[in-house]
Structures are given as structure tokens and as C-alpha cells.
Length: 261
Image (cartoon, rainbow, N blue to C red; front, top):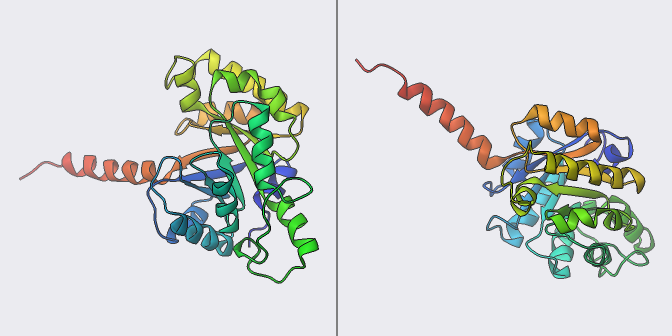
């Protein structure tokens, strides 16, 4: 198991790096992410055709390898949240969260009573099928489960202070790609309006003891570093698809540059 879990790193104010999975379908990717220096990975069920079985297999393997498994669900349907958590995810990433009411409903679906309304499963992969009395199991899973909401619209940024006040949330993650699109500046991650959004959400996170997350900004260490200095402690640093493409392009470009005899 890792020296510190993702949530322990959050508590210590340390930086957590997460890999986005859209391409990989086998448990080997957890080993690759771990060897590559990542703290966490997330299976992207929103933008990739992952089955619940493949998702849970990767999550269960990640636990044994010592990397925190997360899942981005395709919707706010509570059944998606409970199924991926029962399948071994140590946290969920919820896209398109625009209001406090949505955030409160998400917490209710992801937390066991008295913090929420999640249905009790009992033994499962999240704790390695260890026999833990139910009176201890639910509080332990509540403490170890991360609830991450994505702010991806101008409406969400306007409501970020109210969202940050919701008990049971861990991370407010800005989806920079969708947010810049909603703001009419698609892909312009250096734009002052995106920076202003990060500053506003950072202030809300600081005021309400939440973690600021960075999504949709990759291969831009200078900008990522600026946002870390602003207070970001959860950074989605890359995707498996981009890594494969970058390596492929590097090799093919080098080989095609060779002079043929």
C-alpha cells in the first residue's frame, strides 16, 4: 500500500497527481501509473466506453498496487455512484456540477448515514474484503472515500462559494476544457477569464477547507505550477491516450526523418 493515501496527502497539504484513463482496459495500467509517479488514476466512464466490470477490475487492482482508484461517472444518477464505489473506487468524480443542490445530492448518494443515504454493501474490494464490523465499516468508508465535483460552466463558478460550503465534498475540480468552451474562449487556458475563475474557486476552497483541483490543462508545467502556487493540490496531469500518441509520434517522426538509401 502507498506510504500515504490520496486523502492523507490532501490532509497534509501535499500535491496529488492523477492520470486520466480512456484507452487502457487491463489492470496493467495501474502498475504503469504507479511506476510513472502518479498518486491516483481515474477511469473515465463519462468520455470512454468502459463497462462497470472493467472499471471495477481496474479499481480493485489499483488498491493492491498502492494507487488510489477514482471513477468519473457518466451522470449524477446515484446508482452509478454507489456501483463504482461498491466496485472498489476510493472516490468519484462528478461532471457538470452547477449548484449547491446538485452537490448536496451527490454527497447524499456517496456517504453512508448519518452523512448521506448510500446503501450499505458490507464487505467489498474497497477495504480488501477485510472483516470489519458494520458499525466501523461505514464510518471508515465515509472517511476514506473522496467526493470530487467538477465545475465546468460559468454558472458553476458563480455558485462556487455555495458549493464549497457543502459538507462531505473533498475537491472542487475545474474542468478547464468545458469551462473555456462555456465562456466562449475554447482551449484558451491562458485567458484571464479562466485565471479569474481559478482565483475565485481557490478562495472558496480556502475559506471552506476544500481542495482545489485542476483538470484539462496538460503539458503546460508553467501554468500548472502557477495554479499549484494558487493553492491547487489535485492535478490531472495527463491521459493514457495522450501518452501513447506522444510516444508514437516521437518514434514515427524520427524514423520518417531518416534518409533512404
